[in-house]
Image (cartoon, rainbow, N blue to C red; front, side, top):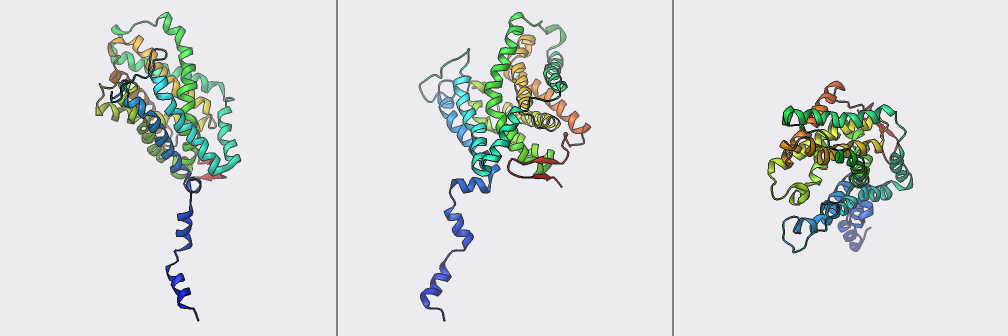
Length: 319
């Protein structure tokens, strides 16, 4: 016979699964949902770190202080802290907690994958400026094109290197080194890009309220165009990722080549169509055209052979 006290305790005791949920701390939540945890942390940490920049005189002007100018822009001081606290730090933290030392070793291994067929370096280094130049000529008209200056030729490589150790290093270890290998086996190349592309673009949203995004001359159309551009670039980067053995350095070079051309080369060669919106539209046309060609020629596979090793586990094939 069961006593009344025992019956009461049995009746009101919560299920084991429910008790486990109540006891689950942040580390356990990360272990259960590493991909979601990464995205939440990347957004939260970056947006929190960007808040002073957004509220400063370089943004909304709510707070009475100026963000220091370095190399002629407030973006290095205003953007970089949030960029490094977001994707790369979140990827490191989630990988270490959820997948342990072996997962961290695998995540870091993609940093060192420089030994890729030399043709890929040639393709990326030449194709990005070539395609953007063609789009720029069409946009501005041949008669308005200006020849490259000596300053442009001298500054291009240092600017690209600066982009690599700032933007490339801050972002790609998170978006492409951590998130993409997790998404591909679960959703395939198309599904992975439909998730990663918009999230990557949306992560930048607070920056549209700063000098980075051209504030205050920003429209909703500019923001939408940027997110669509991020989706198109993401398609191209996924193809390069799959075809180069998941080489992170090539992802960084591709990303930073686009940024360097847009910020340094385009305004010099095409001064009549050098507004923030003009350049964004040009990048969208170039990236969108490349994405469509790749989707058609690969039949949506984007170089994926059906097997991508997750950070924490064995080879899993998309079905």
